[in-house]
Amino acid sequence: MITHLIKAESILEIGTFTGYSAICLAEGLRPKGKLHTIELNIELKQIANNKSPMFGWKWSKHEEQTKN
Image (cartoon, rainbow, N blue to C red; front, side, top):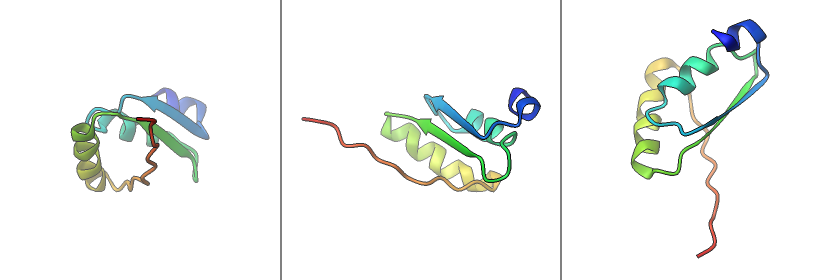
């Protein structure tokens, strides 16, 4: 609801979990708006990636390399 009110251009979500909240937030974005979401748990990333097409959203994948 808040994103609908402010018509956000970009959103940062930390902790994607299953992706449901990300999709809810993204619904209020302006056209061509961007949602950036961070999830470190590989299993949860896969769940979010699998569910997003059901809502008409496509995730772009950005992986960050970490130092060993």
